[in-house]
Amino acid sequence: MADAQFTLKTPIKVEEIKENELYGVLLKATGEPDAFDDGNITAELAAAEDFYERELQIRFRPTRVFSDVWGRQNGAFPSQSLLLLPDDYDPINDIDEPAYNYDQDFWDYGRWGELNLNWRPLRDVSQLVFAFPGTMPLYSPPRHWMRLDRKFGKLQLVPSSGQAIMAVFNQFLLSRVSGTRGLPQSIFIDYEVGFTPEELCAHHKDLLKALRLRTILSLGGVLTTIASPKGATSASLGMDGLSRSQSFGGKYGAYSGKIELAKEQEAQIFESWKRREKGVPLAFAG
Image 1: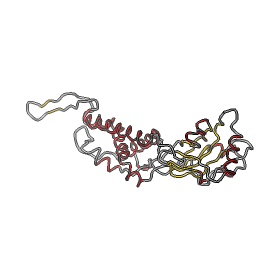
Image 2: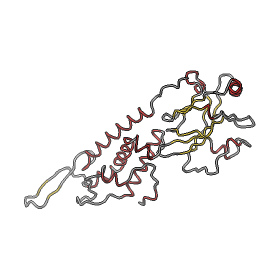
Image 3: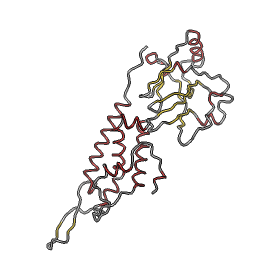
Image 4: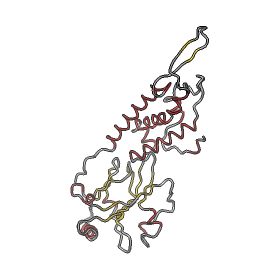
């Protein structure tokens, strides 16, 4: 399996996993040492990265996010230059997500104008547009109204340009929210998220450790059959002192201890990171 099939997103090197997490692992049933296949390790590490990005709603490298790409490409908003996609839009590396709904919670007075974005950490917001299908006008608040909570992926609108502009803003929104009903798919946000390699290495070594451990767990199916392919559960030595047989107990065969420890450590890091990095932050003041 060639490494070129996978593009890793984190600064983790396959050699790190071989030298640390796979230290002491023998790859042949005869007990002969051998190099672990780099292609298998790379594939499992790439799968671990995808798993953590999905479960924790994070990105391991700077990534652009665009709202409703299909609608913008297929004329749902004709002649609206604000919603044109950039020429370098990449359907593979960029994220396409639905527009955000204008609902009751968005306009809650306790967290006025706050919106929880789907991905984090938030690096920057390219634009925010209130848009509706048809001929209704678009409205894009000034960028200096935006307050970003980058760690938790939150955006808050704070009008700060005088009463006249704020009145126009309120009139625009109130004219489209009647009968206390929200308008679906109305808030388009283009933004950038993700860690840089330097940020991961400097502040999230535990997250990188968890990725390496999950890689080992994914390789567990290989490790369980390496030294004891037939699942023998006994050990004996011949009377002549030459012939002998070995067995490896435990749920995961020869490397049960290594795999069990990896499971415990990875679970602890995952839960701790999820509580710390995705918890409820303090509300904005003022």
